[in-house]
Image (tube, rainbow, N blue to C red; front, side, top):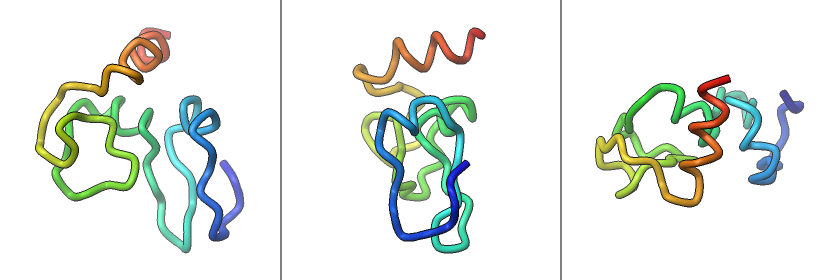
Length: 73
């Protein structure tokens, strides 16, 4: 976890962390959403599903293999 400030973590950091604090809010990363299992359709900043914010459970192609590997561990 990183400290609460205005910076948004780089994608490489987000790929191995489920969430972070941002302006007093708990923000889920792409990994955190993938572990959840499907899109919540709330307009999340790091939604890993496609199409974005649609309620889908299809992970973006570029994140799919990484997330599948991490979830299996």
